[in-house]
Image 1 (cartoon, rainbow, N blue to C red):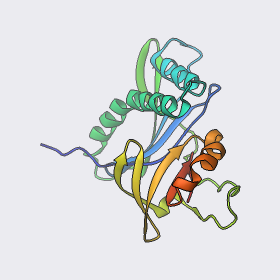
Image 2: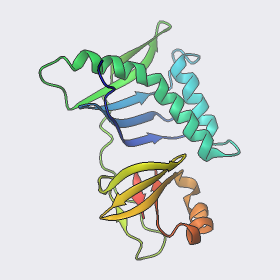
Image 3: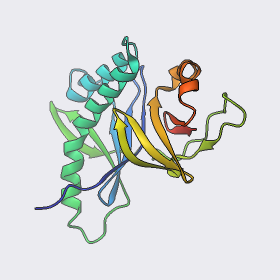
Image 4: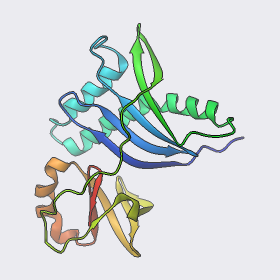
Length: 196
């Protein structure tokens, strides 16, 4: 029996106000750039429904949890298409380095197509608005070791063992001020930019 391919999440991007859901991840030997876009032609379709849940989550009483749950539902919609694509491609002699996959409804049928959006590449760091000596790390410098609690990870950064927690960017200043005394050894993920 084949083992499940290893999954490595690299970067995600989503927003409220009818933005796209994008997830970049390695699935086995292939890097996938997954995409959901709101479908104005069939607004009650699956992808528009899960995206609407994502948009609404930003205004929920606990937006951190609600957005994370809604983003998981977006990924769950894309997952079977990625698995099927991987299964069909892994028999090929040369695997593509990146596959751009979108789930879209056409004539009431949800199916996968390749999209042509630019890759979720390296983003420029945000201005360090915290302490002047607070170091900024690129995502490639952070190695996840294990999940300690729900969405809190033990990580290695430049030889140090730290904790990592992800927050929504618009809430980070308030969260940092409140939790800073307790999280001196924390790495905070703001969207796709990592601060320590």
